[in-house]
Length: 381
Image (cartoon, helix red, strand yellow):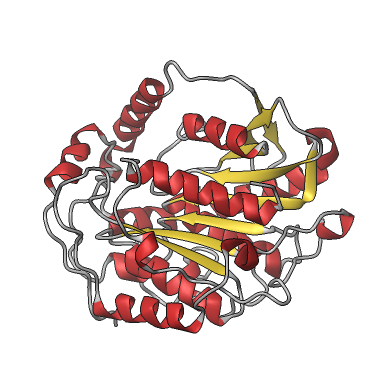
């Protein structure tokens, strides 16, 4: 039974975003996806494509399943082979397309000088678990097998996701480890959706996604399965009991977001398993210089974060992330944690203070995760 549920306050600025955000109403999913596509098209107008080549293709899907569409963002400058980022979009498991994070993926490829591969995994409820995660795994296998043609170093492949995509990214690290699959060298989890049990623990507030958490999990897992003992860790990574040997992680959480406690707890669990971690707290109202106070968080999550910080005080992000290894040995053997490096969970004031030079929260999170990925890839700053 979950305790210390997070209290919420009404945030007029965030609530206003609901008007322009697609609602995942499961009894009208077609209309919801159509609306999401309209927003994608609107958001991808007048994008600067300088320095990045973009290719759409399909890769072999899981056994007895269709091929998986992917979009490849290749930097036009830099030396080969480059690192690669396998990007898993958000969308609450029920919405989204290759264009969902188009602009962000272009910026990520350009900033890192890395190949970014966005995966168009199958959507629930038509394709419930494990369709999405198996599509992601198929894309990872293809990326490693085609590494030379892609100009990618198979030993420097990271996985990246936002919200439900971050949950899939965390699940993928578990799946490839347990299958002795390709080694991921880093996991970048932004506001991850990790736990089906919390979604129905208490009435959920209207959040910026406009989607009911319990409805999303019901669509993804199947009716009446969320919260039961029948949900595997590959569907809800917070249920995992063994996190040893997973790649170093960057985890970002947002104050006031219902996923905050889960992200903090998962970062602490990774640390306890010997996995190097950087935890980034984003303030709730950081998008403006003045606005509502940060929403209160649960005492349990705050205590967990504080304990994690005390246990791992000091150290740098580069030391925590370690370095992605290169070479053919990484193709089918999963790396353990970086020898000689302790986990770092950063929850200090530097991670939660106001914006520097007026930088919005989203820009600060972007810059922070790019810094983490650069450190993981062994790039010079």
